[in-house]
Image 1 (cartoon, rainbow, N blue to C red):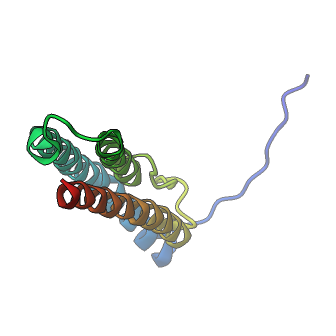
Image 2: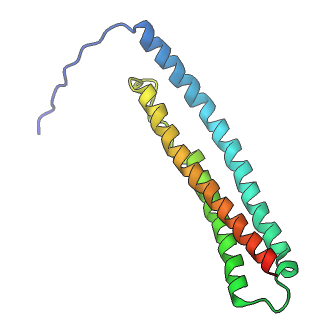
Image 3: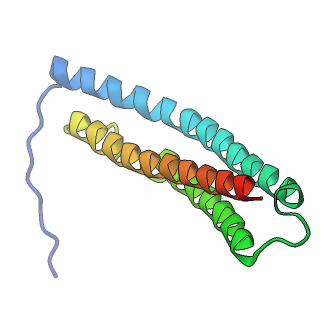
Length: 142
């Protein structure tokens, strides 16, 4: 197979190109710190909620708890874990697909990531709310 020659032309950066390049550079530099801080806080919060639930399990359920109450408690813990996972995904998994050399669609990329993070975060907080309601049902019925 012969080497193909790819023809191309170049031009000087425009003011808009320079602005977009600056935006991308600042975005890439700040993204890692924000994601790491968010993930640390979220994981700590999720595991703290699980710890509180497990610590108060005996007080809420007592020694002779019904099987459905134990199942609900396990479901609440699972919901806390899944919500933590989803929120961490919202913070860390979806990264911006722009670089210093490919910055033409910065606005579209910012919108794409914002939509994904919003959806994941909404689902995560919905699951947190559902887990809290399940815990409330267990406490009220005990």
